[in-house]
Each structure stands twice: as C-alpha cells, then as structure tokens.
Image (cartoon, rainbow, N blue to C red; front, side, top):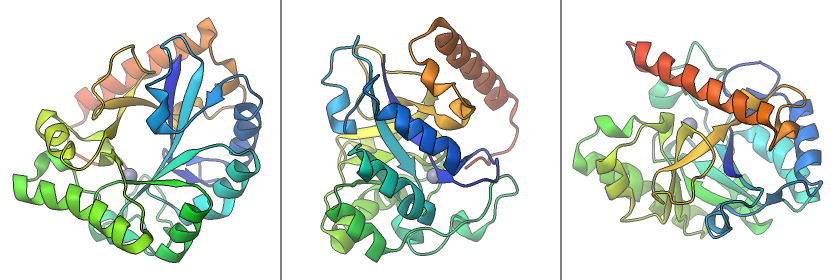
Length: 249
Ligand SMILES: [Zn+2]
C-alpha cells in the first residue's frame, strides 16, 4: 500500500491533532527501519500501487515540528512536507483569532525557523493563507487564499510551494480546480491509502491520530491494519454526517 501520513502537533495533550513525542520517536524508528519506503510526496504517485511506501506530511507548521520532529527526521534522512499558513507564521493556531475548545492553542514556527528547515531539506507546502473553510469562500477570496499563500512562502523562504493541504480537509471540485492554477498536488483528510489512480489535487491521507497507539503503524500491511482503517473511515463518515456545526482543526 502507498499512503500519505498526516501529523499536526507533537505534544502530550492527547488532543485530536496531537501525537505524543515518545510515540512519534518510535514511529520514526519504524519508518527508518526499511519496512516501508519513505519518499517525498511528489514521488509517491510514481511508485507502483503495490509498493509499500509512505510520504510524511505535517499540517500547520507548529514550533514543536522544529523542536521535536525535524531533528528526528533529519537523523534518519526521512523526507517530509510541512504545510505552512503564512498569515499565522510566528503566531499560533487560533485560526481567525478563535481558540478551539477541542485542540490546544500552540505556537507556530516563525519564518526564520522555516527558512532553516528549507536549508535542511524540508519541503514547504501551503496550507492556505489564513486557514479558512475553502468551500465557503467566493472565487476571489479562494484565489487569494491559495495563490497568496504560495506567494508569501516564495517571498519569505525562496521556496516555490507546489503542494497544498486544504484546511479541515474542506475541498470540492471548484476548490480543486482553483488549486490547480498554483499547485501540482493537493491533499485532503479523506482517510485511506492511495488507489492506483487518484486526482492529484484531491489525494487521501491517513491521519496519525487514528494510528497513534503503540504498534498500530507497525502493523502496516496486516489484515488488522486494513480493518482498523476501514472502521475508522466509517466512523468518521458517520460523525461528519451527524455534525451540525463546523469546527475541527
Ligand atoms: Zn490545519
């Protein structure tokens, strides 16, 4: 199986965006063991569907990526894409100035730190300019969120971001078509591995919140692993059907 793995924050809060640093340390050891190939996101689709391979992605660009994740990944030479929200760089993840009741408000990396990560080989992607629900925006605002994010990242770090992550996984055909004007690849929160053919601007991912317990990632390829993903995907679909208000992370 090929899959794109999603992380957000490495902290001990137990929130839906959090993986504990100690758990991540063990996962990195497994990812570096050779059981699966860890490749840049841009290379993953070129591998045969039967390949056991993953691409690592981190959303939001928390300061704890700089402090915890980056050194561990560099040590194992594991490639990663970090999705940055230019309008919040150096601030925190209170999107739109509103703190979430469900996830901790934490500092985000600043441009100096992001520039150093680029020098160390981290790929920066865009996570829109201010982290809105994209499907709720008119065309002009949508273009500003998508194109503006890429422009800021280029101006501040020199890197031409070619990958975008839609906040809250909120995208539709109009959003994907707009994103194609700036980006080669787009990632969602649809919980599954990659099929043989995928829309490059609407790629599914596996949120590591659902694989955060010891041994879960390491069960890769087993019937138990496939069964767990299927159950999680069904539960998520049910929850999003039942949800009456927006929110999430
Ligand atoms: Zn996000």
